[in-house]
Length: 571
Ligand code: 1PR
Image (cartoon, rainbow, N blue to C red; front, top):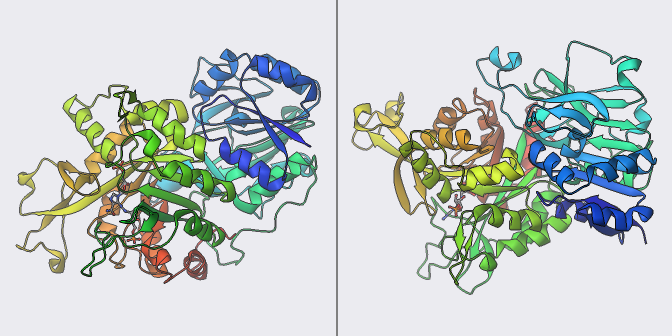
């Protein structure tokens, strides 16, 4: 039986990689190498080594060094045996990263990593900022060197990237000289105007900045070619919009469509996908049962097969069953990650938990359990509100101990999503609040008492508790504390099929630099077009009810966007 060895420094989701290996090399044995002793024990047998780096570069390099893995990995490479780095596993091949100036990488490539700029001239020209991290599906734009060494990576596919730092090269320069290349083959990608290294290969070394295990069929094809030792493989058939009329987005990313599953136990105790109407998930008849729209893993798999770019699971009653061992989503994640090869986000109950015996489980451990089960990102709702309140009360200073700070320090900012549940509050005069208000221009949209201003008041515990804080203020605080993305719901629009809350999205998106996911209200494919057209440019759009009720498939949404000339990834 083939054995694939995987370096594991225990700071991210490697279960998905193991699942992807199982998918492309059924029956292969996966052995995790966690320290020097493991390496020594298996060294003589290792022929195929994966070096997946997740999260923060500094944390990863430190772990590789402290676990005594740097020297054996370098010796392994020198011996000519095959290795594939993934994401930070590519970055660690470079000399150093601005993310952690004190930490030395393996230095195989004389390159350094820098942070993407939010002030990208392509965006500045149209009065926008580029979202950082880069999260989403990008293509590979350009190559240098012998492309038959890239295991089928090609420019007709989209791959999933999630990172703030990259080996950014001069976008003005057309070619890397042979001397600079030093035998390396490069694949480059553009994020806005910044061109960066998407993949590298030289002899026995291959590495990708994107996640092949999260890039659907296109990524699985690359992984398969590597495991089979076929550098000149063809790669997967195209997963890109093909029409000549297709736009190129400013960022280069395709329009990201997320399917969201709100999950809870029904009155019979079964875990079901439900969907509320402004957060009320019970049927409107006399029985008032929890609306049951299907089984979580089954529906998630269906949406993956329909081409969803990402799946989000929200445990909407997490506040009722606190202890970690009672988290039903762990099993959902484990099962879903076996067959779904796009990013998975899980939310609900990500905070410090207290077990029945009084033991406190820190939020980073709660998150780690989800990453281990197969999640790529965790979404924090109620706890984010409490953390933001403390941040303002403390003169806009973090404590370093909150869930947002601790999870992003270990797993990277891209692993931390903030789920915001705001509700419109009308006010007659801006002086009535300290929160930033929106002036309502359209008289048809004035408040019930003719109020001409509003702000979006945040709630926690699934809309049950209202706080004296605006959605904008919450997002600004969470970005400062280290969140990597915002899932922006709108209780007023949730389940209404009336379209996204453009006013709220505009307010938040134009003031934060991390990606913003539009959520709540999608009723038809046209609503997705409308929200992507929003001049401030949301980064992704999420739908729930329209997919669960079978009114539209993810494919329908993508087909519509493609007809309208928008760039979408096909599966
Ligand atoms: O507070 O960290 O434990 O997380 C709880 C999570 O559960 C939060 O992300 C919160 O948004 C979510 N949640 C809690 N109660 C409900 C509820 O519906 N009663 N669901 C709930 C929120 C919002 C969206 C929804 C979109 C799209 N659901 O995710 O799927 O609004 O719906 P649509 O396309 O059908 O309009 P914590």
